[in-house]
Amino acid sequence: AVELNPVLQPLSWLLGTWESDEPGEGTFPSIKPFRYTEKLHFSHVGQPVINFMFNAFHAESNKPLHRECGFIRIQQGTNRVAFIIAQNSGLVEIEEGELTSNQLKLQTQSLGRISFAKEPHVQQISRVFQLRPDGKLEQTVSMATDNHPLTQHLHIIYSRSSG
Ligand code: HEM
Image (tube, rainbow, N blue to C red; front, top):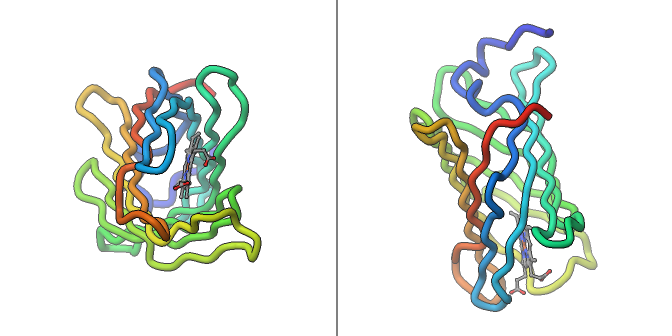
């Protein structure tokens, strides 16, 4: 195995594979509430960068839905973290924020989308990753669209999985 770049030590708790044990809850004022499952993979190749893939599925049909992948960087010697994200919906995003012990809070710093992205357009995303005392990982995502201010869209809890 490649040795972890020491710059990543503060984020090493993210590394590995995570899978929702209970389906997550999706909500937004303009949509019907839904349930989904999701697998997260965080890996590294020795660079001061984490590579990630998030793959979500419909809880009942198992049909692939939302997918995101990208890179995570931390500014050396600080608690400043950046996510560089591509989403299958045609959105690309930089999210930045801060790491405080086992919590990572991020929000959109810049956002781009394909010319034919579905409406309503997302205008802002904020999310929190929390490593809980029981060893589970929790993610909460809020978004603002053309039609609604920042409101929760996703909440899900993952357990470590073997792959
Ligand atoms: C709906 C954005 C992650 C499932 C939506 C809508 C937007 C959006 C803009 C339309 C809201 C409206 O019509 O007013 C995002 C963003 C995500 C994300 C920015 C990540 C940061 C996910 C994930 C799932 C998911 C992980 C899991 C399956 C859905 C579903 C709908 C929806 C089922 C309703 C039906 C539809 O419009 O396709 N999302 N979403 N989303 N999202 Fe997400």
